[in-house]
Length: 130
Image (cartoon, helix red, strand yellow):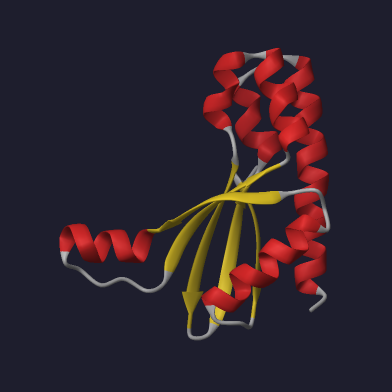
């Protein structure tokens, strides 16, 4: 089983991220963090890489369920999305919650993982319909 759920859209990365944010909001997910990996590598190593960002997606209610059920499982949150651009097309690789959250065997966490996967799959379906 893959540790990612993936799709792409034919938009440059900054526009694609705005599209992603709006789509996520329609499915009860918000983007709570953004790391510009390309800029970090340029600033810290002086090297160039193609556009690449890491986003953190979260549903506060689901996050609360996870950390209430197992406080250590907060280390597995939020759902990470690797975003990269290649030739004007932006690729989204979402962390697969049902794979990653198997690291904690609490049944409540597994239920949240299933629900989060449904939300992510709905986001992917909407992005693919563009």
